[in-house]
Length: 259
Image 1 (cartoon, one colour):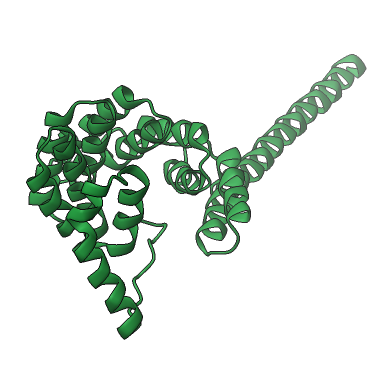
Image 2 (tube, helix red, strand yellow):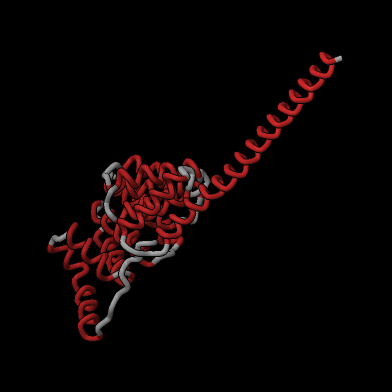
């Protein structure tokens, strides 16, 4: 009888221990779940918080720092790559531009802007063929992307493919858009015409480019083409533009770095 009662006490005690162990395990699991969920939420919130800080303005190096922190927390944050890559572009850090917009293109494969900016970076690195490939890809995704045609035309011109440069410049002009972009298209086509000996067509395009963007196109033109004959073609228009600036104090809007 004593043995039976003793065994019963041991069994009851063992059962109580098992229940206590199960309770501890359940409590531990619940605690881990409650700890993990806020952390995952905080993960996303922190990345977005840094992204917002970068988007709010301030010095470029701080904006890059914020976007980089956002990407450290969330390496799949596509827009952070795009924003940081654009800042690198204006810093002329083209290898970093290529990295960021390549990552952007992987995460957003249907975004034409990613390939347009890759084309811009390769164009700045004088890698014309790769630039053309990326511009062409952007154009296939968005056939109305006038600036992609304009910059691809410039890549063709620099590669010595003047007929292709004229073709794509003309397409950009027909699509129209930002006057500065279209001014570049006229400027590129004019230079291609000059290379082909079409001085009359070149002169008409240079004049049109100056009407759209007097300062920028003039400076680019002079730096690339300073022959007496070429200067004669556009000299009168330039003088008129300078006269307007001095007489009326015209101020032209500087390029917007977000464009």
